[in-house]
Length: 142
Image 1 (tube, rainbow, N blue to C red):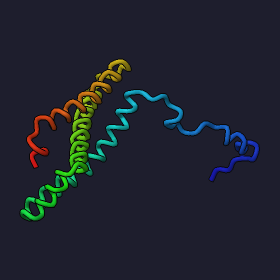
Image 2 (image 1 turned 180 degrees about the vertical axis):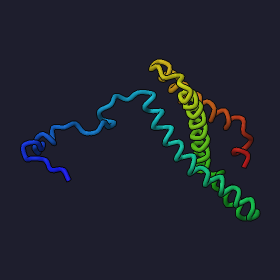
Image 3 (image 1 turned 90 degrees about the horizontal axis):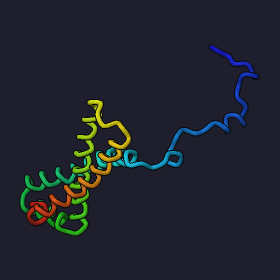
Image 4 (image 1 turned 30 degrees about the vertical axis):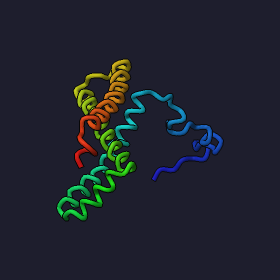
């Protein structure tokens, strides 16, 4: 076991003066930073959205009464908001995943290019989700 002599150890004052690990308060927000956080959040949101899809499949399998309960939820404004959020989450996660595939190939790392595609993914995912809802009959076909 290694021992450090007293004069080689940092004093409490020196330890407190060291910078903390970089955090959101230190870094300046950028579009690439936001899309990185959104990508993680939409991955989690999509996983929870799959619970809704599972509920739909189970309700269909259980019969009209169970499906009626599901249908009542997704027809309610809160259910519509949840479904739209799920659509937006999947849209963003898909588009940003495609951007990550390009990054895996070593393309798109220049700051202006990365910033452009970050904003493009945010805007296109909103347009894609709105387009899906505009074109879908009724309440997403449910």
